[in-house]
Image 1 (tube, chains in turn yellow, purple):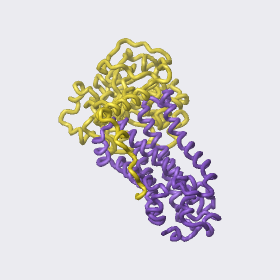
Image 2: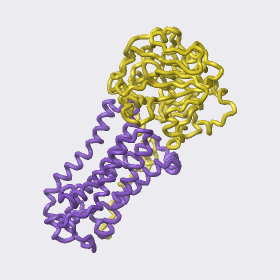
Image 3: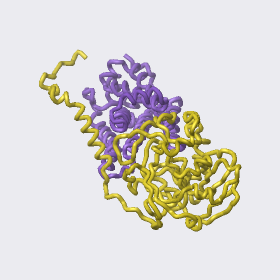
Image 4: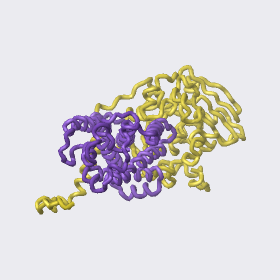
Amino acid sequence: MSRWRPDLRDGDATPEALWLRRREFLALGAAGAGALLLARGAAAAEPTGPALPVARRVEKAGGEKPTDWDGVTGYNNFYELGTEKSDPAAHAGSLRTRPWTVRIEGEVKRPQTVAIDDLLRWFPLEERIYRMRCVEAWSMVIPWVGFPLGDLVRRVEPTSKARYVAFQTLLDPDQLPGQRRRVLDWPYVEGLRIDEATHPLALLAVGVYGRALPGQNGAPLRLVVPWKYGFKGAKSIVNISFQEAQPRTTWNLSAPGEYGFYANVNPDVDHPRWSQARERRLGEFLRRKTLPFNGYGDEVASLYAGMDLAKNF
Amino acid sequence: MNAIGKPSTTTTTTTSTTTSTTPAAGARPAPRRARRWPLQGAAIALGLVPLAKIVLDGFAGRLGANPIEMVQDRLGFWTLTFLALSLVPTPARDLLGVTWPVRVRRTVGLLAFAYASLHLVWYVGIDQVGDVGLLVKDVTKRKFMTVGFVAWLALVPLAVTSTNGWVRRLGYVRWKRLHRLVYGAALLGVVHFVWRVKADLRRPSWFAVAVGVLLALRLWPRRARGAPPRERAAS
């Protein structure tokens, strides 16, 4: 301490003019870091895979540009193929999507097992560009190809007892090696109330970017519910079951305090460990505000009239 | 638990023992300094490799679709790695009689602090774009953030007092006692990681086991010749 001698002179101080602009420099630095982070090393890859016939297009993302193919197919949560975001794309090769059948059962007048290629002919395919908000506070815009879930529900004629629909993912640790470890209680199960399932926005997707769904995105058939957090979208579905009781859904069983059955996107109800008020749209630097029901409130809020959404999160 | 007690060299005075365990910041001429520097240099160079990789991957666009999160996670991973590594030298010396790791312990600890600070600065400055208000809210409201922040706070006095001057000023016994804070920081760091993941506890478990074992080894009886009485370093 005693050895310390002042050796700074006035001239060593930052000139006031620069000091006054310090926030600009900080902003510049942040913008530079942002530009660097968003820079692409190579040109974005073009979509690949078998092309699907698309009868019509419905744009439901406010005109926003879809997240590029690399992002949509390279940054996935599909724990059956690994828990890192890049794992599903790396391991999707082990998933065989043909032959593939879907069992439709429970409280329906026409229970059946249908081959995926027959199911694909049941309804005309349409492109639906939706926002996708993950519970982890990131989001994408995805051009799905599929058909309304409601069309399928009506076709198989639920009985009056059918109050819920449950969706089950394939259980096969050889094809889905992530199932060899009990990270979650396999098989993955998700579910909707029947009125949610018949809402025109609820989609069964079979493709993305006009191409057949890649394995990492839940080929050959997955659920897309754009006003709910992404984990509601069960992937690689083998069973659709209509039932009277509310399905016991996988993430809800794993952590009931964190993942509710409804899982409607809600900026006012935080995940216990992080805020849901804002989200990072992949490809953007600044977080943006999360919209109630992921921006689909005008169309879906009436489904939950009178419900306490903080309790039924 | 600390740098003293190096077989065959600890017969010198306390101060020179202290100096010999640290890089030359103290500027006291020590006979073994020349041999220490390559080791320090190697530790620093190796320690900066993960950071260099992050920067290179950033320029090459190899950080995936969510690069901000990727950088955050990698910085956290390396913080925990260096924290765990900083716990290795003491049992290595006390139980195995291997002394060279002790000579880079301070460097490894400072690397852990550097990565922890970058991890925090990245979160506040880039992820939340300087919204310190949000940091305050996060730290007070979310337990996983609280433990992470407290772990970083615990490292601050250790980094500050990592110089030879501070060892002298505090006296070795007090200095050593203070630096046991690193045990708490490492444990909180692991808890921070455990509470961060959604369901897959595999990677946090590696750190939990590593830190747990390294702390437990400190309870093991030391090898006789590497166990000078602690009080000797005082004064």
